[in-house]
Image 1 (cartoon, one colour):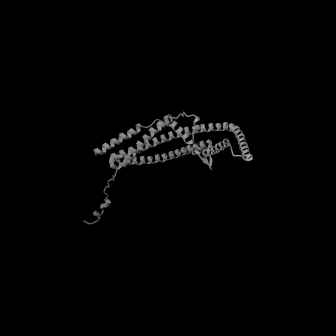
Image 2 (cartoon, one colour; image 1 turned 90 degrees about the vertical axis):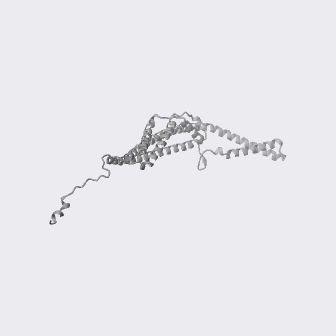
Image 3 (cartoon, one colour; image 1 turned 60 degrees about the vertical axis):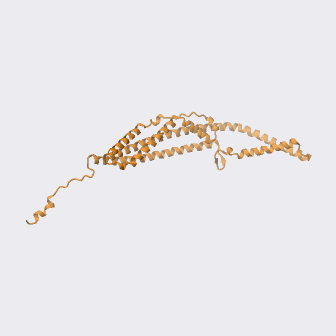
Length: 291
């Protein structure tokens, strides 16, 4: 009995500790991003890493990490208590059941706060991507203006290259003379340039982004895809809230059953059967039979 009481007291202290460690209200914790639109120059993978690193330095990340530790401790406590429940009897078992129900309620509260913090993180992250998308659209417009000039310049360069190649071929064909040292060097350089251009096109880093139907994605498409992922995570959190709702219903039913058992224990009716008193009808034969 002493061992049971000691274990019961330890469980009481652990349950009390779990209540003291409840975190601050979720709406008091925030994340104010410090990154700028300059991260748009990064590849998608590194852009995501930069955002996560910025989050990791926030008070919101610190609170989520602390909350995760508290939840893990609460899960360990509940798992151990539930495993040892059959070791207790009578009043000690009722006390352990009460702590189990209270602990489950604390767990649901902690998980609810964690979900709210996760939502806040995703909302801020979505806002960052929205801001980057707006900047990307602006940059795309500015680039389109200079691209028109680049196209004209490229067309002129192509025509010059074609004329140069044509004149060179005509020269060597018409004279039927071997190419000079300069001409040979020119040809070697042109061949080297072609090989280098091909190597650039086939380099893995040149295809680091995703693709749609085999076509490379634009930066705007990459940003929108990341935003869709964030919205999917928000939908999952909504489902987790539904799970917590069902958990709360089960805890409510456990509490109701516990209250019934506690009343039976307190009023001494556990296994109690009312006394039955004798009736004259049970002894009528004594009077029917003659003496």
